[in-house]
Image (cartoon, rainbow, N blue to C red; front, side, top):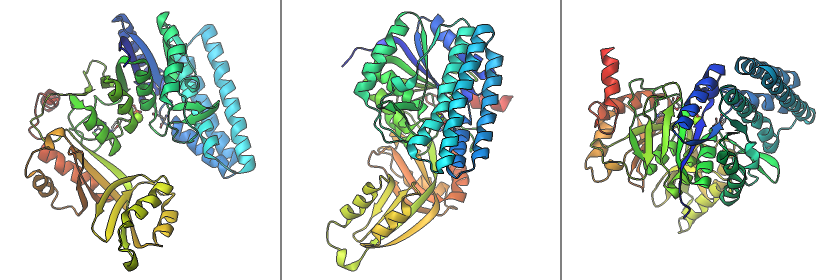
Length: 475
Ligand code: ADP
Ligand code: ASP
Ligand code: MG
């Protein structure tokens, strides 16, 4: 295994951390702080907040021939980027930034006109359109750094993050990324520069790809893994990984430290704070990952590591995933033979449809999935071998904690806390660090609030930031 480069820190800043000129300046100050400590940052940025959604809306509009709507959306973005640039840079730097922004938006508009002329949006073209968000934000942040006296060097992420051609959710080629990162980023770092690149985007044989929504976290981890960095920092708009989404429970507490497995489980089961694949490259090389707040940089955040200290509370956090469908599949009489489950899972496999939860009996299987596009085709195929029933608008709630292991009676406590909610399909994961179950979508918030009250009223102060609760209640 390669030796760690302890002084390299990969710092990923999410959409809200680059949402406007003030946020970009805060980002520059945070990175400057790391440089002054003698660290060598490599910076990964998301598109400015909401830009990805707007680009996708523009692409969709163009795809249905609504050319003017698409171009208007693009115009709005052009103005926002030009105005932000004008607040960040001056003189020649501003002139060249404005030229680049116009150049990118001119290409984007050509692309949108082309899409609306043919009236068809392919995943490949959609990736091309959406890539402009990170391409623009990374140029602007690099300019902001230079303006603040940091030696920012813009790097086109598409030359570093090399992927397959699965447009919309491309898989990275880690070996190729390691070579590219070594040859392109290390020389910059070696001469005291701070590379700045867009997250989320990559390329396959020179054609732009993306890693899937929320994929900038993944870029951060891929670069950190490739260079065997000393740490990966995910800078966002909350103090760290919290005991649940603070939008649902405002008094949620920061988790000070959590294991790779717990964080991966939380991310997979819906905690938006981290992209599910982010943890993988870090685990492979045992690189600590920090989740930190760019609006409150002094806060110590959450440390994700291989071996956090034991926790007296059974759970670390509660996640939820909405917009799921439960599919009940009951074998037709003549197919009760063995091999039924294999046939069922082969159908999901064929449509690349990931299954979140499964429960089986001898003749039936229930699964939950979140892909909606493939459902009609899957249903048609399954109907050949089984009776199929689908129920939409479901949500999965997942409680995660390594210390569930060996705790007897814990499921009784969970279900008595939410005895007023209708629960379906319960599973205690094979990994033994999660307990999950399905509820109706409209019950999710209430169920989470009840569970949070039950399990986090007297939390273990060595693992959870209890002081923050005391400070808030004295304020
Ligand atoms: P970024 O743009 O920085 O990538 P995201 O919006 O993707 O940020 O993720 C941060 C958001 O994740 C938070 O604002 C919060 O609402 C949400 N979130 C969901 N679950 C959690 C959790 N357990 N801990 C912290 N944040 C969470
Ligand atoms: N900008 C992309 C998105 O909104 C990627 C990211 O922010 O992580 O999904
Ligand atoms: Mg995110």
